[in-house]
Image (cartoon, rainbow, N blue to C red; front, side):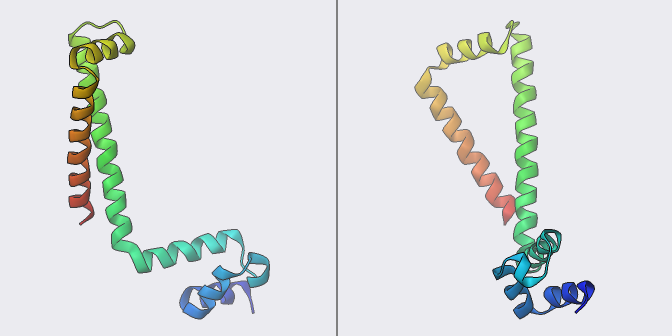
Length: 120
């Protein structure tokens, strides 16, 4: 069987796919690159919607992180803090550990809710 025939069979025949993925590459005759392609193909076919939801959630998290960084930087600059440490010390002394923890927990819950909506 040629390499292209093997790839075609592994991608189209579920029994061949399962056998190839369960055995070491040397026994199934596939390379690491082919294995990765087969796994990606299988994941897309069986969990494509979920994968896209995860990608959207990751993008939303990245955007939220950038927004927090910009907001923090803006507040720090407006308050004329010399550096991040001075700003962090100010926040800690102003809010206190418990209040800061409560705020962070609230933000985490809101982000979790937003991620669930994106993933749905």
